[in-house]
Amino acid sequence: MQVNTLRRQAWEALKAAEIADPVREADWLLASALGRPLSTLVFEGDRVIAPGKIERAWTLIRRRAAREPLQYLLGTQEFCGLELAVTPDVLIPRPETELLVEATLQAVRDIGRPLVLDVGTGSGCIAVSLTRARSDATVYALDIAAPALTVAKANAMRHGVYDRIRFVRADLLTAFSASPGGLFDVIVSNPPYIPARELDALQPEVAWYEPRVALAAGTDGLDYHRRLLSGAQELLKASGRLILELGCGQADQVLRLAQQTGAFISLVCRKDAAGIERVFVARKAA
Ligand SMILES: C[S@@+](CC[C@H](N)C(=O)[O-])C[C@H]1O[C@@H](n2cnc3c(N)ncnc32)[C@H](O)[C@@H]1O
Image (cartoon, rainbow, N blue to C red; front, side, top):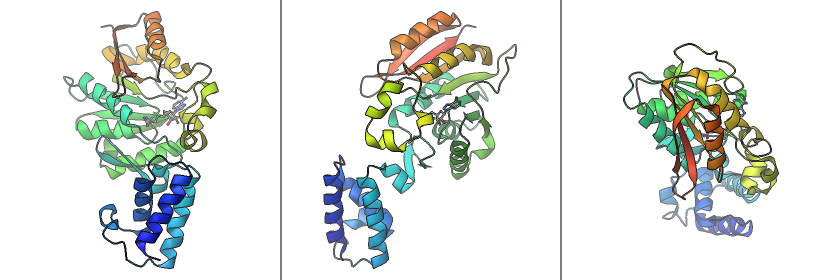
């Protein structure tokens, strides 16, 4: 079989499975299965494919047609310009989460050797991006899921920042005790925030394949925000920032919860490219 024939069959199979961009995704999968750069596939239409590679390509096409995320099949996702390993043990990093990295870098702009805690690190996308961008920063990357920490460590190693990240397995902030001057300049988190009743209505790629521990957050989706808002104040230094990702429509409630703690000033929500209030930033009173 030639490359062009297989490309056409792959497009058709993915289109029938209602994959939004079947042409592009088929090419990504074929490039991976055939071990060829994506850019050359189009020029190699009459190249004859070895039977073993056809088999490998069809395995990937069938899995994608069953709505397994492309990123799990390819094993990578780009985040803040870095290629990160992803497995089904971790949430696939989303572009809007790059805003958390941006907000954190802005918060520590004038602080030498900042100390940051990334709660729910998953693939390590936030921790690795921060330590790559700030060579004097130390980041604690924390997750409750041991398999996620394994992926985060591999990504830290891949990008040469393993020595500046401390990996911690813990339930949110329970591993740390309050100290008089505070510990961290910033606590940043993209916590789970999907309300229980919405989980099964998510698109199949998310509902069927991404880890529930990375998504589910109780009845109203704010279980983790509540715990982080009440626990962070004891661990932040004076004027330290708490930076949290928000789900669609959660901004007002999170602002209210933050006000109720009485511990934070200058509460701000920033919008993402889709106009959704996505990033919550609060400064601890000095
Ligand atoms: C939405 S994912 C975010 C992953 C990554 N930071 C990102 O932005 O792509 C939430 C992460 O929180 C972790 N998590 C869930 N419950 C936790 C808990 N009680 N304590 C610490 N981490 C938790 C999950 O394992 C998951 O990796």
